[in-house]
Length: 512
Image (cartoon, rainbow, N blue to C red):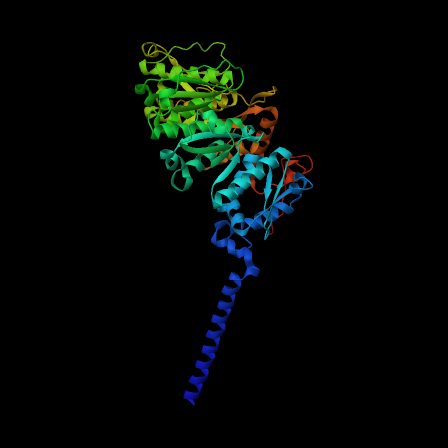
């Protein structure tokens, strides 16, 4: 009897095992079947893995069905037929290549789910650019990329950089890392290409290198070009700088000025990891790049002049603090702070001041001479840059000083609203509102500022909201909504808000 039972149980287990293996085998064979061809993209692109729920195809499909996208697209989008391998290459990892093509061209680029037809919509010029970039990406997958230099649209959105053969790998970087970094920084797309036509003659007949094509808007192309040239000079010292001369452009609009520095001055002008160069560029609004010891500044005349002045002041600091006339300058804000707070604001080796400059895109200098500083109760801090960035930096410094010396800036401050188009509104926190509105490491404050597109800084017990009238109104509204949330769930009716009257409000239903 027991022997019969054991044999029956054994047969049942074997049957189950066979059924499982059969089901697994059928799943694998289906996944490789031509009828399930979209799954084959999994081998080429991680973005298309895990089928429907996490794929780039499904995201594109949802976007393509949304009403907003339907309104934005042209009635008859241009289409490009793709192979399976092309589609994976166009999408790139996580859909980044497709997004880059769309960003640089200005067109809407979509690949519907389980489709091999790329849809391109937008104005005619944007569609032309997008199709050209798509063709370059497809050509790059199988071999060389060819561009017709005699095309009338060639120079409209393309810059060619001659790269010596021995530098091609250095400029590309490991797995294209350097080119991808430059593309991300300047909003461009780049390919090594072969030119059809006579463009090479413009380079004096030098055809001993590779041609790097940079596509995008003029400012982005110029920034990427200078970055590549700097990399070439770094690899082959003297290759470019031996032929570069100082130059000042006489045009009011777009141009490039060049200043040659001494090699001994370069480390000071560059700063740690290029921090000083980046600071100059952001504060002046000008493209600033160092090719060897030659400083290239590209932009309109006002931007170039600001960059040159800021660079001159930085170099003057090598011999001590410089004397700058800040009166009647439209690009400076002067703030007086207590002498005992100077070290606190500056930080060790200027670390605190440098973080503020990097974060807010300004350039700051203490203007008092060393021999006069001890005789004065306050120090004069000059903040240079664009108006919005200067105001954000000024409030950040005020907040820092207020933490060291409470009441210095807020002793006579009162809650109130500014009636001007550009100005500052002030809110007084009550009780424990400040800590709640600040959040962990200031995260809530940053969230409010970003949502309202308003400058928001807390100085002592006060919230300063700076910007246009609309930005300040929006920031104050969000701040009060946030504080009301402390007492419990916030309902729109309690706030006196209707969905129809607020263009910045979207209400969604969340299941219990």
